[in-house]
Length: 291
Image 1 (tube, rainbow, N blue to C red):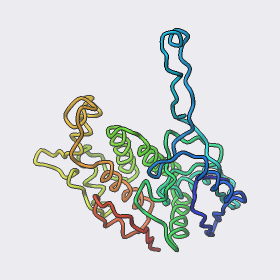
Image 2: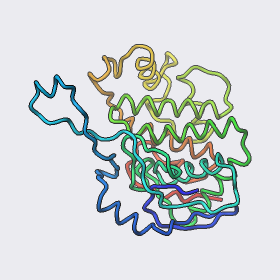
Image 3: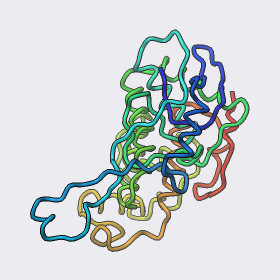
């Protein structure tokens, strides 16, 4: 199975498969730097022209507007060399490798949605070094082989929305996406039923990671996170006002994403020093995956 888009040329062998570059890799990479529009580590889709109505053409003087295409394809840069014939298994490996790379990787022929990152580590602040490639992918492959179909789908959904959600433009959309990821990990965790406010507390305890201050419970059994979530989901408010009128003082785009990165890694069984990192760190970390 071919996949991409990935500028990291690293090739490596795991027990059941190998990750190698396609023969045209150098040509594809050259074309990427010459032709694709990017900004701050993100790829933006090709431009397309909208067509005004006949009335608008008669009344308005400006030309038809140019927008970014919401769905587009990228050339495949890599492929999985393997005897595995199950496409579901291979797609899992591709998305899992994307999570390790801090990117959203797709099998050849699939469409990217909105903007998508090309800079490794963009989605999680983590970089693969040395043995991380093999160690990480062996863990992800073993997770797939040892898990139920329900759990495979659930962790796949979490990684997918963790990645897609960061491509959104508005803070409330990014927050909503990461909250869905949190709920997905809770579903996967096997923890007993509990109210929303308690879930981050129990997940942090289960996976032995730092609980962010905004997820700590107050005397009423609520947290800043649960209040923000309930208002957004049930009352069309964000940070106590109608959506778009104000923003929370907390940097959820950074801190909630960091918290979820740790939860996903721990749920997969990845042992990394990053699990002990502060949730508000802006530094890039190496995975340094332990075996």
